[in-house]
Length: 158
Image 1 (cartoon, rainbow, N blue to C red):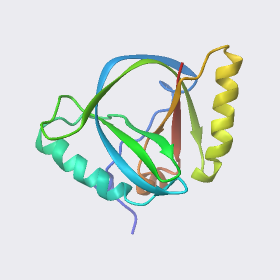
Image 2: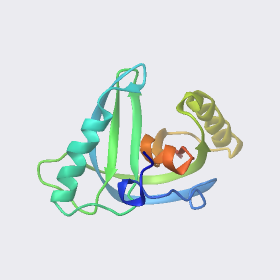
Image 3: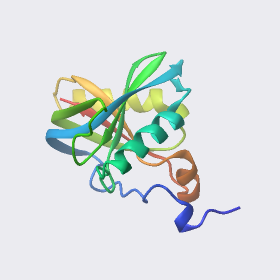
């Protein structure tokens, strides 16, 4: 079965505003949650996203085209940041501020190690100091398959 436009949960991603750009955020608001992983492979990402999106929708805090970031903190887990329009009682809230060098990559997740190396090289070439990397998975796997592109944005906080 081919999904129709109404079956898609993700918007088509435009890499233009992100690729090789520097963005500055000031107190950008996010719900923060934790995903269990095995060797960086997420085990419960879908259930974590479903639970959070239901709460975000219920609170009227969804940001159209909002950013979902992953912070790979260990082989066994990652912090997930879901952009929201307002604080949501009962949820873990945080904000991100800073300057981020962004680069868009396209392809299968197995290329992640290479992309991280490319991002480290880009930061070094710009004579910047890397503070932290976040990973913006722009679409879910189903929508990426439908669109024919699997874009990942790496945001290097400098």
